[in-house]
Length: 441
Image 1 (tube, rainbow, N blue to C red):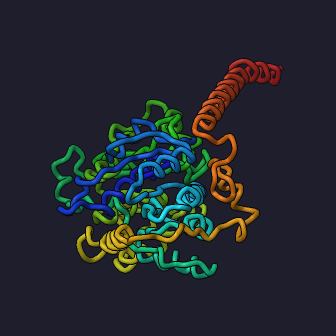
Image 2 (tube, one colour; image 1 turned 90 degrees about the horizontal axis):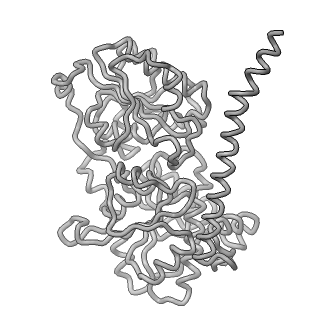
Image 3 (cartoon, rainbow, N blue to C red; image 1 turned 45 degrees about the vertical axis):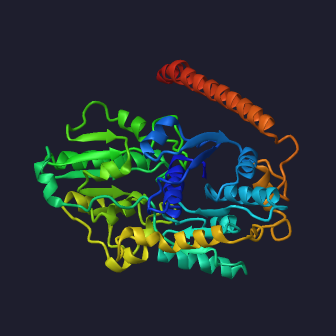
């Protein structure tokens, strides 16, 4: 399994376990080798521990290193849990590596959560895998429409569910024995939504005010990463730094928290977010869930995905005691709290993978994008990961060369970052006071 961020590692590893159970019905009899694609979002050891999904072996690789490794090892199933461009590069690299082979592994890919932007772009970059997983009936219909709309084969799309749903159903009686009888409100933040200081400070301020208005409730801001760590999306304005501007005047029933989202939801009585996939985890457990409208319902925020869910609400409404009531039909189409046992939602995907794995031969991987269909787009996508347009490794893109280049880039990037920080500190501490004094003359 190859992943390029903490969230994608979580989705990919859990998906791998659900797709390839052993004869007893569990994943304990299968080996999971984990590969982390070297890049800006490569997860740290702390992030991997927080996710809570382990592999039998783990190592960091470049794109070319990964293709060479899986070509040597001959796995049964490969799960690509990556951003779309990386999936496309691996598909072409694997196609080239396996061009003379009669037998090859089954290749699976998909999305880690809510798909609310770049639908066509992301899907076509994933086309060519044997199985493209859709996390709901809603997504499966959209995925097939995109593929058939460009004349590509849509049979690779298989409906399943998000692999990290589950957990205990919400029991409102459980909160009565807690320190705060009014319950726990969890605000699940996102690295890139919203994307500006004013809006993020506003949301944080409203969470603090909610704690002040309801001293019988605990308000927990669930953080994604520590400053300096990267996730699936870049976080330019960490909430940890923004809360420092509030000083020490914070209510005792307000706190920041890290940790596994499932464990945080174990204590939640209300989940609040802008558009995080955590909302689907919460809804699956029947926890009251609010998708904020304070900053509008906009595509750039992603909360438009929840139109019709019954979960849209503002902090003012939550302050007044409102608890959203989810729409059952919407939940069903989103693969959340649907009828039937949760495990059965992966049956179709398991059967498809097993059928392909048992076939005597598989056709070559056939991505929609080729040097013929996308000559102005594909080469750049592949070059970023060290491949030529035909999927062969680029000259100089050997494992050793790529590692040295990556190391050099990190050194240069860190040096430039430190220089920029030094210039900023000098400007704030030395130059700005002089300018203020001159203005007072």
